[in-house]
Structures are given as C-alpha cells and as structure tokens.
Image 1 (cartoon, rainbow, N blue to C red):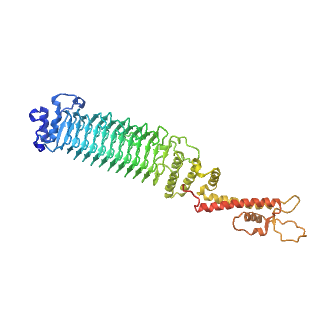
Image 2: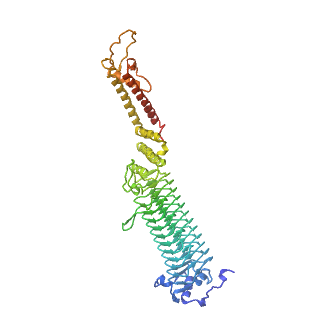
Image 3: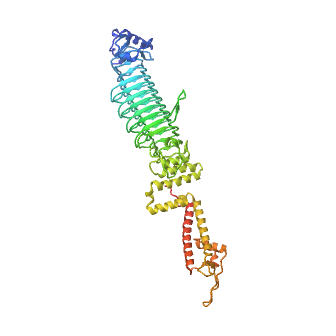
Length: 602
C-alpha cells in the first residue's frame, strides 16, 4: 500500500488547535507555533500547556505525507514542545523539517531516514540518533542544546550522508557517559561547522568523534570548547577534509595517551590552523597529529581578536609522546610555530617532528624551545636543555624561518634527547643550498663534536677517541683543511729551525767542529782532520727542511750535513726523523681533507 493511502495515526478531528495550525501551515509552507513570543526551551521541556505542545505522531504523519500534499518549503515549527519520542526511523520524508526554539525532551531518532533538509536550531533535545541518515541539503543545529546519557553518543551521525553543510555553531552538546558528537564515517558534501560550540563528552571515543569522516568542505571549530576528562576532546583519526581544518581560539581539554586533539593519519585538503588555540592534556599529548597530511600549511600562531586582543597558541601535554606530536607528518606548505607556547609538564619532548616532512618554510623560532634563544653550540649545557627538548630525527625541510642557523644548531646540540647525524646533515644541506658553504662546514664540525661528546662509544676505545680528538683539533675533522696546511708549514719551519740549531752547537768542549757543517772530501787515513767549515744560515735551514721532507730533496746535503758520528749529531738526526714522520702524517691528512676522503657523512 502507498504511503499516501495509509491513514494518519492522528486524524484531523483528534488534533488540538495548535496541531491544526501546524497542519495548515505545513500545507502553505508557513511557520507555525509560538511566533510572537519566545518561551525558554528549558520551560518548554516541562510544560503541559496544550497551546505549546505538538505530538510527535503528527510530525511523523506530516513528513510521510499522510495528511495530503505539503508545501516544498517544509514543515516549519517554532517554540513548541514535542510530546513523545520523535521517531523518524527509516522515514522517507516528502519535505524538510525545521524545529526552531523547540523542546524535544523525549529525544529524536531518524536512523536510516531520508529528508530533504533538517534543522533543530536553538532547540533542546534529549539525544539525536541519526545513524545512517541521508539528507539532500544541510543539517542545522545552530544554538541547539543536546543532552544525553549514552555510550553511543549524544548526537549520533555515524555513517550519515549530508548533501550540504552540517552546522552546530553556538550549540551545546553534553553526554555524561559517551561522545557528545559521534560522527564516525560521516560524509558531507559541504562543510562542518562547530564554531563557538561547547561539547562535553566522556570516554576514550572522544567528546567529538570524527573517526574516518569525510568532510567535503572545511571543518571549522573556531572558538569551540571541547572537554573530555577521560579521553580525547576531539578524536579525528583518519579524518579527511577537502578543505581546511580550523581550530582558531579553540579550547580543548582532554586526557590520556591519545591526545587532547587526535589527528592521527588525518588528511587535510587545505590548511590546518590552530592559531590562538589552547590544547591541554595532563597525561598525554596536547596535539597528536602523527601521520597527518596537509595540502596546505600548519599554523600554531598568535590570533588577534577584533578588539586587538592577542591570543597565543598554547599546547600543554605530558609524556614521552610529546606535547605536540607530528611524527611522520607531511605538511604540504609551511609549518609555522610563531609565538606558540608549548610545554610538557613531565620529562617528555615539547615537539616531536621525527620523520616529518615540511614542503615549505619551517618557521620555528628558537624561543619556542629555548626561552633564552641562545646560539652557543659548544659543550657547555644550556640551562633549559633538560626540560625543553625536540625530536627531529629524520625531519626534512627546504629552509628555516624565524630562527638562524646558529640558533637551530644550538637546538640540535642542547635540546635534542640524543645524538643523531641526520639533523646536522639536513641543516648543512639547507645552508649549502642557500650558498653558505662555510656555515655548512661549521654545522658538520659541530656534528662531529656532538658525536664525540654524546656518543663516544661509536668511535671505539680510549685510544681511538684520543686520536679522534686530535684529528678534530688539527683539521676540524677534515672540514677546515687550511689548519692542516698551517700545521704542515709550522712543522717545516721547525725542521728548518732544527737544522739551523745544529749548526750552532759544537760536537764537544774545546773543539771547533759543529754538529752540522760543510761536507769535507775524503781524506787519507793518516791525515789530520782539519777544522770544520761552518755552513751558511741558508744551508743550515735547507738541511733541516731537506731531512724533514717526506718526498724530494733540496740537494743541500751534498754540501752541508749532520755529523752522525757524534752524539749531538745522532740526537738531531732522530729529532728530524720524528719531524719527518709528522710531516708525512700531516701531508697525508691535508691531501685527504682536500679530496674529502676522510669526511664522515654520519
């Protein structure tokens, strides 16, 4: 039997005067109810005045078309109490429904129903159960108050498909034993708005639950207050939005390891904006956005109200996961933390950016992590390093903003929990790409110093560590090769000075022979040895250099040489051998440094 032929459950002759007015207005597409004066919805919820009450059966009959043809503008009712549960389960409505400023103390259910449009603006409802709801247009609960006590949620939109926008602006959603709004797998063609909405829920599912929801436009929570003492304030794991996600000036207080705001594996088609937001969690992350992906920027900046009042983004968390966790996130634009206030009340990191990728500018002022904004990268620890750390293992970004390379280097040395090579290599690559080769070399030198300071076991035993320290002092680990050239020149000068000194010392008391003197031609065995002939200053210096050079000779030893038959000559010979070995080592290191043979990428 067709719906039009099924008689209404409330015949016309059994309708009250107000209900007849509602019926007539629905046929004309006009509003009905208390239009001239407004009664508080709390009073409506308990009134028995027939002039203020409409039975739920009438509304159901109207939407099923059992009272004849209705105007396409829909059933419009204002300022009434709906008596009984408004049951629209599996109803295919012939027109839309708008209940404005009304009270539905017995609840509203429209599971797997189909309506052109639905509005409950400024109404008081004891639960909206709309699993699988299909709406061609929009769903509006602007200024509505929804109170419930059920584990499944106060407003249940799981699996619903809304052809337009979903608007909860200015509403109050309260559930003492479950989510205030449960909208997992919700799909909307338009945007989702919870601006200035208060949502209080309970449980690990979240006060507002958008798990695996797909929002065809933006998801906007500007100025909202989200509270959950036993789970996330906003649980948007696997959320997908075609537009931006905005939590400007939103206050979210959650609890537990999942985070106050949970965006794990969410996919944002535009920007993710937290300007002026306050996210607090005493036992987990304030913002848990692991594996988040945005096509636009991520912003945790100061918001300026219309009256000029400035609100910083505040993120307060606790635990090893970090106050702000962006582990493996991919930000398609900039990541901006300008003037953000981030704190961890325990020993955990402030920000976790491990394996994250930022396609645009990484704007993270040093003062967000290190209040003093220091630039020192030496071994002396920073006073704030123990309690204010960041995790940047595997972080990739093209350039920095709001922080100098020296400040970022300070963060790597003093505000990371462990030594890791990749963050230094990344900073060096950024500086090199900007044409600052000297800065890049300095970064890599500090990397090696940090390796020696925080991971000495990676270098080997005590002797290896000592050798590495010497290598750092001499050649700055191969990144300052000119220091090796200077050391090489100094040893050559020392060799020359040794040769000159040998020419000034006699071989013994009362003799006129010197340790270094001119070479005499061979003499017969019975010939008395004549007095020695001193070498010139140039010959003595050349002698020292000639004996010290690892390769090549000057030829001066054919004319001037050490007398190795004497003790003094033997001592000088040994000294020059030592200098020659040192020159060999320095020459090898210099060549290796200039050809990058011993530079360590890690």
